[in-house]
Length: 72
Image (cartoon, rainbow, N blue to C red; front, side, top):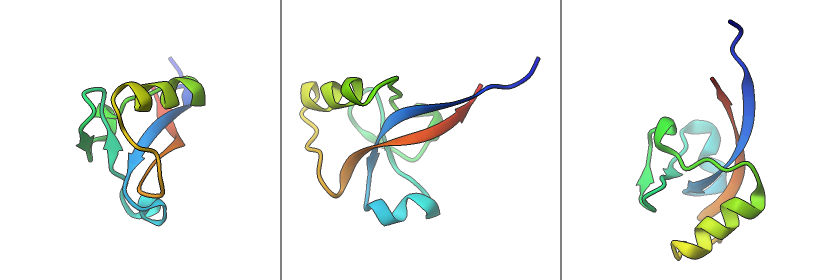
């Protein structure tokens, strides 16, 4: 069975320039994590933004929404 690659929206926690060297994510519980597998994943930007609003996560230069590739 072939593995599929899917791009999903996640919330990053940390400076945008840091993503290449090691990302920190926001998990579904609203806390930050370095574990990619624990990152909250969303199919659309709007879903990620709604999650941020509901969990009261301020989107700014330090916490932001971006695309991340995941392989199943």
